[in-house]
Length: 65
Figure 1 (cartoon, rainbow, N blue to C red):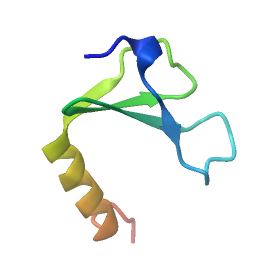
Figure 2 (figure 1 turned 90 degrees about the vertical axis):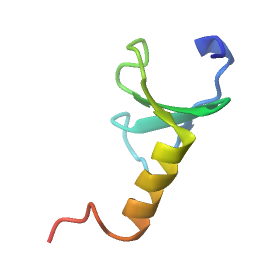
Figure 3 (figure 1 turned 45 degrees about the horizontal axis):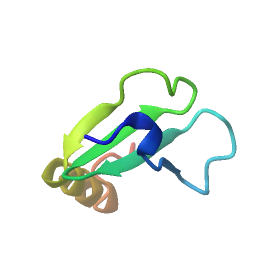
Figure 4 (figure 1 turned 60 degrees about the horizontal axis):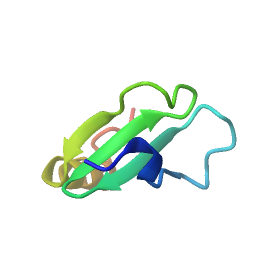
């Protein structure tokens, strides 16, 4: 894993406040953190898990009705 200072964190352009989720790509892992607490350990997902999550988002799996 890269050192945290070497990671490039991405945030959605739709995020208008400091309360956002940030994502960084590190070799074969996808890291997710809370922008309000960047010092905390990020969640870590395999690229396969991340792709499944993205597919679920696009399919509306997590949309409240």
